[in-house]
Image (cartoon, rainbow, N blue to C red; front, side, top):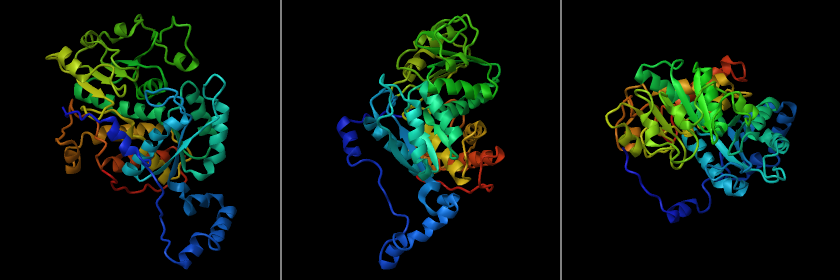
Length: 424
C-alpha cells in the first residue's frame, strides 16, 4: 500500500496561483508574412471556405480538438452547490487532464445566470446557452451539474447537437466501475449475471453505474439512497430512480449488503461499517469511491476481513485500485474527436470499459508506470484496472471508442487513427 502524502493548504494554493491552463500557439508568428496569414488579409480566405462548407470548421479551426468543460456549479465534487466561479479550479483541472493524458484541448465554460429562483439548474437556460456557443467546440463535457436536471440536460444536448456530449459525472465513473467489476468477476470466477451488487448513492453516478452493469448483463442490482433501498414500497422516487426499483425485502443499506458480492459506493464518507463488510458474500469486492474520504477506509476493511479474500477499490490515487474517471473521459473524447463522432453512444461507452478491463490483463507493465507509483503490478486483487499513468491506455481505449463510433454509425470519418502516449 502506497504511503499517503499529506498536502498542505499553502502548497495547494501556491500550485494554483495564476491558474493551471493557458493558451499556446500552434503556428509560428515571426514576421509580416506570418501575420498576414494568421490575421488579415489571409484569414479571409479561410472564412470563405468555412462559409461555403461549414464542416471545414473542423479542419481550419481549433474546433476538431477542442472540448468545452461546462458547469453551472450546482454539484462540484463533494462541495455541493458552490457556484460556477468556485467551480472553475475543477474545470481547469479537467482541462489539464484532457491535455496531459490525451492531447485534447479542454476549456472551462462556467455558466452564470442559468439557475431557477430555487437555486436549481434551469434546464432550458443551460441547453440554450450551450447550443449557442457549441459551434466553436468539437465536443461538450458536462461537469458538476446536479441531478436530476443533469439527465435532461445531457439527453437534450445529445439530441439537439451534432457533436459528442458527455456528462462525466454520470458516465465517467460508471465506465471505470464496469471495467473493475468485469475483472472482479474474472478473478473470483463469478458471473456478472449471477452476482448481487449493492450501489450506495442514487445520484447521477450511481444510476448510470447501474445502467452500465445492467447493459452488460447484471440482474441483481440494489441501489440505496439516503432513505434506504429503491424498492417497490417507496412512494417518493423520481422517474430516474423508479427505473431502478428492485424487488427486495432489504430496506436499509445494512440489509442490502448481507450476502452481497459487490458494494459500490458513490455516496458519503464513513457510511459503511466493518460489520456490513463482514456480512458480505465470500470473496467480495468493496468499491468505496466517495472522495476525498471513502464510505469505509481500506484499513478498516482489512481489519474486518482478517483472513478472508476480498478486493478493495477506492476513488483515491494513494490506495490500490483507483476507480476514477481520469481513466475514461480524456480517451473517450480523443477517440470521438478523431472520427468526428456526432454523439457518444452506449456502444462507445461499453467499448471503453472493455478496453480498460482487457488492458489490465497485459503482463508487461511499462517502466514509466512502475516509476510513477514506485512499485510493480500484476493482474489480481491489488491491480484490477490500469493506472492513469499507463501510456498504453490511449492506444487501447481511444482506439476502441473510435471503432465503436464507426460501428454505431455516428462517425464522420471512417478510418481508425493510430495513437501514441502523451504525458504518461
